[in-house]
Length: 459
Image (cartoon, rainbow, N blue to C red; front, side, top):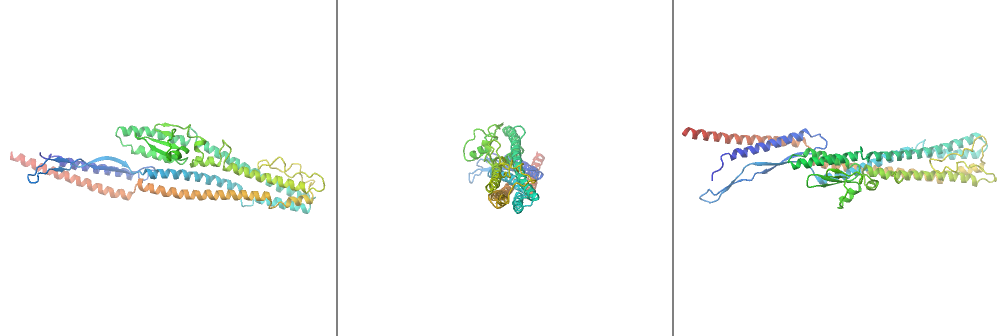
């Protein structure tokens, strides 16, 4: 058997093609170094099956193999699915912590504590005004001070209640916007992922490179993870299933999700965008439901409203009771606060109490003045402390989550991101490989030319 005369040219050509593909891929990496969601690509090369040469040696009786060059197997994306999963889990946690920290911060800001405009200051002035009335119970100016201070306390409670209600409405509005099945971001991401699933499957079936589509799909799954937990399951045809919310948590533990948000080319919003699936699931949506669930009327902010109502009721009850108990004359002193207004939204000074004819005796005013630092103050102070503690915990969780997300993102970027220094080094190596293959081809070409010319000249 003779060795094919042109195998060397084919070997050199395969080297040229492989080096050219590597140079082109390196150029693609460099061009997209700052493109969000881009994954670094790499040419995968494998040695071609060698040419088996039968025994030619009369001494050893052995044959040999002749190398035939290199094949380009594929152009792959550099991704780590484990880091992708970690990033998405942490992104969900961080988004939820950011939401809680921001909204609880708004609750704390509404309290305006400690400051001269907060309820604590208003209560102190209220008790002080009663003390002044005790010293001169018939003084219309002293009674006006009590009325003014009482109205300020009631208005502060009314305002706080209104701000909590407004915040509940904002939470509900944000939740409804995010879960809108027509134009909400969750629905939009899910529909785009499903569409990309179809395109990726078609591309891979026909042998086309789907790296760009895969990058786009991964970026959408990353974006989706901020709203709630996600779990990705790979299909054999290149498509993926994406579980969402509590279903994703169950799927991560091995439970089969019968109704994934994205199932190949289809989307199921009905079974996934529900309070039952999203409550406690993490992410922005889970955090919003934890703060306030409009369906049940429960949540952290609703709990604050209930506690504030307790402060208002305590204030109305203790002040009116103190006045009634101190009424030794037998005359019926009017309650200072309207007995029907026992919530923060409805508390109000009794409209029948005026400064024209101060209705309270020194004993009654003194009984009210002695309430300073009492049950109402203690209830409000405990309320402020509770919110302060909750905000501090939320902010601490936010900082920790953000640090972890940054660390995981950096790890993922070290795998998938483009290093310009590394790409420039690769470019030099591939350029040298291309030049070397070209010189091999030129050397073989010159050898064949010499052989052909000499043989031709001898004929």
